Length: 375
Ligand code: NAD
Image 1 (cartoon, protein in one colour):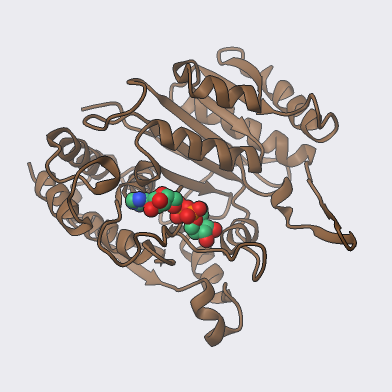
Image 2: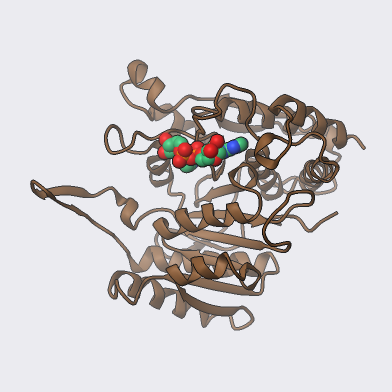
């Protein structure tokens, strides 16, 4: 089969918030890799957040596929987002955070954020409250999916805790607004180290830091200094720096030159969507939000209100996130079975969803994937 998208998202050691190192683990801990899939002694307790729009459709599809592996899961289902405000007075009730911290594992659907008004993004708040400092977003060309380039294989490592996503904004005087970009040495060093550890653990050869330090000399300058400093500790990994606008142009002309890319929060958000577009779109790219206390797996995409409730959503992105979760749990065989089945369905091309040029519904695609898992 093809090389896995991600071997693991938990490169030991992961840097903690206080700059020390500690192992990144996900409860209940890895099983022996050779334990039979059909008789897992542990149910994995996972916090499940279906989310908004297509969220419940793609999460339910993923749960069906995960259960078809024969592994045993306990799903602690929690709602978050606009719909729960009337019940709990907040879009992010405390029990959601408590459940994730207890289980240390969450599988999440997209949650919509009101534009220009309303509550603060639940996604950003969750990442902050859980200390999920690293967002790993792999994108790789898959068989059977038409893409502008045949051999893209890029992992965007996005800093998840600060930058312009600090949400510190105020009106200075009417007509003038200030939005603060926070960049710290601790968070920049931590994400740079994560990127190099990830590259090492996953056999990657190069880390590219994308920045705008030519303009934001202090903030992006600090980020870059931290990346440079960490890079010196990893002489076997090639290190490169690219100004982010040039990085975007290079990505859409010569994407093969990139391997692992590390960047601040906003650039990471934008560039990872761009990279998704290079490999088939948002319907196929998964991600993991990593912290010392928990890991939350979710698609890169949003709630896709344009196709919600129509049974058209492609659940592959959440499935890819679930595969990342299984690999972090050392459930390699189950992860490989799902990935192999997805690739086989893509290669055959009969049961792919509309975003990939087919006409299968979510349910038809899931049935085809599960059908291939047994073979
Ligand atoms: P989006 O990702 O929801 O949709 C962009 C386009 O991609 C749409 O055309 C959509 O139909 C398509 N698409 C996305 N996922 C797909 C899938 N699985 N299968 C098939 N097609 C898919 O982006 P948007 O429209 O900018 O955002 C909608 C909402 O989602 C906003 O409220 C935004 O804040 C939120 N959002 C949440 C997250 C998250 O929860 N992590 C991430 C991004 C956006």
